[in-house]
Length: 194
Image (cartoon, rainbow, N blue to C red):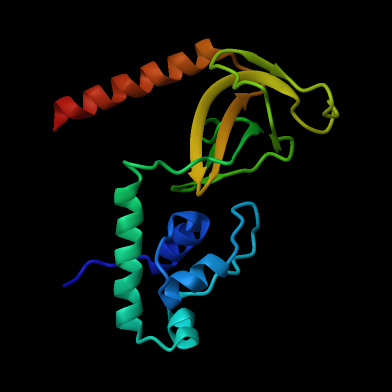
């Protein structure tokens, strides 16, 4: 049984980094003409089946060529790392999931909070864990507008770097440290029981 390949991801990656395509095959020419924006919710890239029909290349042959181009790109990143063109911060001010989940019978469910705030900014630097963030331009009565940074995560979408800053609207970093300590102790107990 062969491994499953995500050809749509390969196509997306090759289109985003098309400047690294150096051949002149019909597939490479087509990929260079396509445009993709990670900020656009509409996925307008063709699938491998659609490319196969359009280029009149048998799908098995097209898939093989996609794999070769993709692996060549990945291996080439050691010599010529791709450049990130855009960096932005996604600010998420909300009560964390584990503090908001509710028990309903035997099941847990997540109750969304309409006061949560999610938006993107281009900040000059990334706030650090434990720092307080206050966004005065948000209406206080309608949405959370301030709190303490408790988590930071980095997501790379092609040539875009999204730094996600998670802010707790009420509790400071000490509260988060206590939660992490409790979770660590729980895992240690579980590990000893195995």
